[in-house]
Length: 373
Image (cartoon, rainbow, N blue to C red; front, side):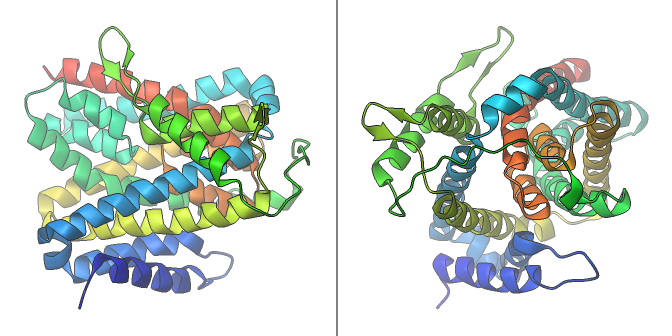
């Protein structure tokens, strides 16, 4: 009998098999679980879409795995975040806002030249940059909420795929030799014990969730950082502090990487399972056009960010890969960056650009809704 746990772990199993297939120098790695999730979501649309227990369970998988993944990568990156921000801080601000502005500019162009529903395209903009806070801003600013949500739903998967494939393929296209890239000196200090401090880890998560739910009034809109933003702040901050009194926030990196990988494959599989039936259900000529537009917006934003970071700011690929995924607010993309670069610097780049990109998506979505009126 089908149940969501069976579908999740079948998705992970076959996704990892798919991810290990290598074509020349390219393989999907953990991103294969996204595709297997999409397949199983499509294969069993009735169960996934109509069974309330399935949807509730997949939502729990999604949130829980996201918590494990983001908390672990934040704690790993916390060892280098101070030095990276000191060295690259303003560059990350400019990079993240440039990426989000590029997507905004292209979306405005499509609204002006194409005779398509502008509210669908507003949703596509948030979907292409995988930004839930951006979507929330748009929804609170317009009355055509169902049209915006439709655009977001259709545009989300192309946005995810664009980031994942770009991160894997850019080094090959531009002949970037990752092994020869410069690296910042890493702090070798970490917990000596192999036991896992669940008390400290749980506290990092609890504080992150609280931070993520604090409303921030920007004047024209109120936003929340959400789980990802809150956990990034708590894990990067507490991890860099090291300890507060007797509470130690230094963890063994190998253990954190294992939790990170478990969280990532569960997260990607959950996205696929939740979205697989929607992709098929919404698939028609019009939605295909929106998917292509989402893909174009995502790729345009990614490559603008790449050229700015690589050739203007002279950033090494390890850190730039993470910065691009942060600028695209793409957690699945970060998984690809980690696997592609084999460097924790990708996480630091992601953590440094993500908050600025989040702000950019809120601001540009607000402007989009005003322009549409």
